[in-house]
Figure: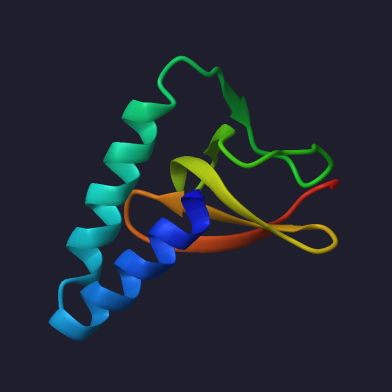
Length: 88
């Protein structure tokens, strides 16, 4: 599962003091693996699924890694993980 991979990677990176590099590498890997999917513009009124690629006006391109009940999702951006709302 994508979310477990990112969480495990982040935990290991924090212990090693390389969290920023780990997020960038994981983001690049996820974007490559999902390169065939279209990029959707982010909107809190839209629905997203795990693996969806999106473009946020501030954070840039990211990929949905985990759904957080009921209307939140975790997104891996190139510089950080963020939790954003969506239509669910």
